[in-house]
Amino acid sequence: MNEQQLFYGDNLDVMRKNIADETVDLCYIDPPFNSKRNYNQIYNNIGKEDKAQSMAFVDTWEWNARAEKEYDEICVNENGIFTAQTSDLIMGLYKILGRGSLLSYLISMTLRINEIHRVLKPTGSLYLHCDPTASHYLKIVLDAIFCGQGGEFKNEIEWKRTTSSSSKAVAKRFGSNHDTIFYYVKSNKAMFNSIFTDYPEKEIEKRFKRSDERGHYKDAELATYSQETFERLKSENKLIITETGKYRYKIYLDEIKGVLVDDIWIDIPPINAMAKERLGYPTQKPEALLERIIKASSNEGDVVLDAYCGCGTTVAVAQKLNRKWIGIDISYQSISLILKRLTEAHGVEIIKHIDISGIPRDIESARALALKKDDRLRKEFEKWAVLTYSENRAMINDKKGKDYGIDGRARIREGSEQYRDMLFSVKSGNVNSAMIRDFRGTIEREKDAAGIFITLKEPTRDMKQEAAAAGFYSNEYMRDIEKIKIVTINQILKGERLNIPLAVDVLKKAEAADSDNQLTLF
Image (cartoon, rainbow, N blue to C red):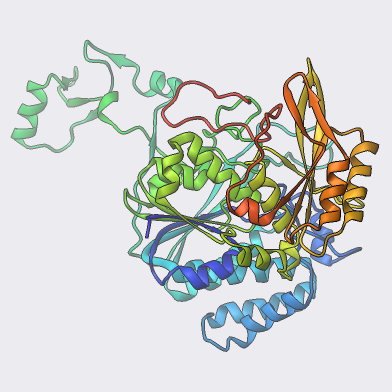
């Protein structure tokens, strides 16, 4: 088994089935939650049911049969995997919050934090990244799970993620510009490496204002000392004798590690529009943030887990810092982006060193993905098919409402600054020629260039004839291509891919490892 593992699926199922007890040194999670919701509406369950969603993919927490089942699992505690504090807490929150989206969200988080605690080594640590929307609730969940089993709360880190807020947003309150990162350890055996940053220039001028031929220094009183220490300082030209005859000694700037990092992080800027590492992923965190966390609570060769790995910043930094890593995400868009990010940074050979689980490898697993009942995964089959066939160059259609069967789009260059779309439609059930006619009608009505019709089941002869009747599309940049091309899932599984040039990659290329050059779109 490879040291690096990437899982596509529900992190609760993945952790329970694939990660053994006490095998992880460090876990960082940045779980989705919609911070734009009004807190009072969430707390009081006022109005329509709140649907918390991440910015990268829609994930709904609502009180339904699944939430009811998960609530019972914690409260009944049939398998004895929860602390008494955890069960009591959830029952207490039920009385306060009632059946609603916030409680559903907290139950979901409780199940997953409990599994993270299980897989952490006694020396392990958890960093949970959140915002003020529900941080106070998440902290008592963490207390119940960690402190109820010999663990400790270490820090509430505040990361200043932005520098300003709009005047409209802060008209009736102070500006909100920080995220919270809770730091917990499984036991008092947890390891920790102190982190230092360089002294700011103003601090150097203030504290190290004296200098000699060696460099900037400050001095300190030599209160107690041995003759050996005295002679050593004298020989190193560090000894200072004051006018009153007291001894002091020089401390040079290059002899100290720097400023010890505390729990207020204002020195790591967020990902901005011009950042080299920017991938176009809305909730992307800067690599410097994860580098600090990984260096503080793990060593080379340790195992780092990210159960909500999103665009893969944690695994990318863990790879760079020579850690083993486990990444999990429920969205295929995230999985495809992570693979793209890693291959562009380290070359395609890196894929050989990653165990990838959950991605369809045969028709049975593709059919299983298509038929999943979980509403959170209802679009994952279509996403997988579109992104795999287009090699991550298409855009997923996330529009709500009537989409005319369009699951994705890719852009084709027609001329100087002129583009047209290629449409993707994915079908997992029965298919017929009428679907091809409808697809052709959508392409012509929208004045799009062409379309790819992806089907799990084999197309009929009538479907092939209907597609052929649509003719061909061409422009000055490419030869004739089929106006409507039918592609089966079997063909995709065997390696068939879209082989025409597109105007632009949807996701910005990751910065190559150890490169000073910014990569551009192509």
